Amino acid sequence: MSASVKVVIAEKISPAAVDLLREPRWIVVTPDQMEGGLIAQLESADALIVRSAVQVNAELLVKAPKLRVIGRAGVGIDNIDLEPATRQGIAVMNTPGANAVAVAEHTLAMMLALARSVPQLSAAVHAGRWEKSGAMGTELRGKTLGLVGLGRVGIEVSRRARALEMEVLAHDPYVGADVARELEVELVPLADLFARADFVSLHTGLSAATEKMINAATLAQMKRGARLINCARGELVDEAALAAALRSGHLAGAGIDTFAVEPPVGSPLLGLANVIATPHIAGSTAEAQEEVGTLIAQQVRDYLAEGLLRNAVNLPALSAEQYRRLRPYLALGERLGSLVAQAAPNRGGRVRIVYAGEPAELGTHVLRSAVLAGALNVALDEKVNLVNAASVAASRGWVVEETTRRRERGFPNTLEVSIADGGQELAVEGTVLHDASPRILRFDGIELEAPLEGTLLLLRNRDVPGVIGQVGTVLGSLGVNIATFALGRREVRRGADAMALIRLDGEVSDAILGPIRGIASITEARLIRLPEN
Image (cartoon, rainbow, N blue to C red; front, side):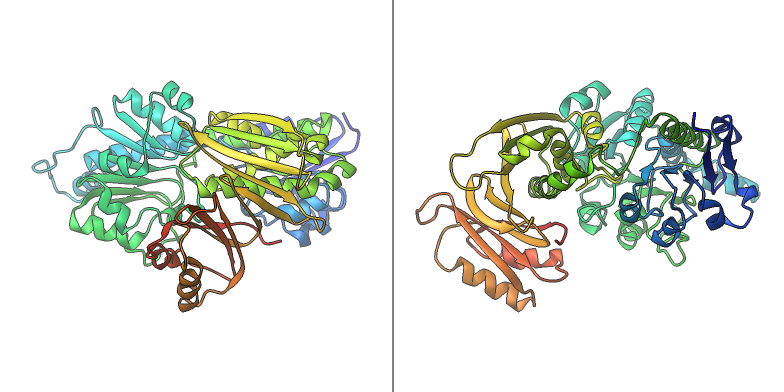
């Protein structure tokens, strides 16, 4: 092992985890040994281990010229600024899934407590009331559990629910049928899950598509008397709408561990007798904290000693020259993956990638990861990138097919990405222009050229006169400015399938889709959000 390695542990982890780093001639600085403060210690540090309190930003990283790796004891990396870390050549790694069992068990605790009114009855007994009469509960056996999200936590919940003889449904467009069958879970559309589930439990990430997914409309789809559990992200729930459903009796109860604003001062859920609330502690068990500390210490040790990189959230394994040549195509692949996933959010399971020209020559395994990262990041809470995209896709049962081809005409260097499930396939094709900007060339068999950036309004319509004018008029009346307008059609025939990709300026709300869909010839309208160049 290296003779001069210094590891700075900025926040408390378990003693066993610290011991893993005590190699001969290694210097390990723990939180109670911060002589001169954290910045002074980082001046000569090779590794930094944090939890969630320390903000690892660009200003801090500038003070750490020798830093090679940052280890986050946990999943979220909101407190670590990835861009300057990557630019500075620092590997950033986390410990995804280490607290999955803890969160799953808390979810089950919420379900059982709701089913038997445990907190309310306990409070009554302590207050001197014997409320046995009228305290009839319900069993979990034979009930239907609906899991919104079947990632690491959702899988652990499903296993425990099956042991309690529950029927388990799940909605997760990024999980393959084979994975669900192995877990004895039925994959269903979201509306079916809401209609059938006695308990609905949220285990999905936060994104533009999932923010406030539990709202007045979706709550109305749920069975009367159902119960909702949220141990995922508070922003998934419209708290006012949930409170109304609980007060009306449409929902029998809710178990909430995460709130949109924490602490939840003024939340309409506070004070409701049929709400069980905990202070965002689903993942806080002694075992989980021991696990995340031990895992991150082992990962940091292996990286410093052997160069072994696990659970990295940045730094693709490329030389500087490879990265320079690949970088424009990595951006293209990620945006095509994101575009096709947003355009067909309920299609998943098989991804097909076709490389032509330079992308095929440069290294398709890295481009494959860029495509998968773009598609997976549409819905997942954990950050997926070039390093972990393949393993995340595999864990969700995705099958990836790759081929290369020569293009005889048009643009020589292209990527084509398609996502398919159940025989349906949506394919998009793009290229990189001379200024390195990614551009789409074909969408679902229709040729059209448009920039792959910013907010795009995707329209499908019947090819009849006046559509462009009506769309422009509606957008103008809503105060939305058009930056570019790309059109294409499947065949030259009145009434044939046509489509448009319209680049819109500024912040654009999903509320514009209602008026657009009101145009008679429009058959589909959705907003696609991609990074700005």
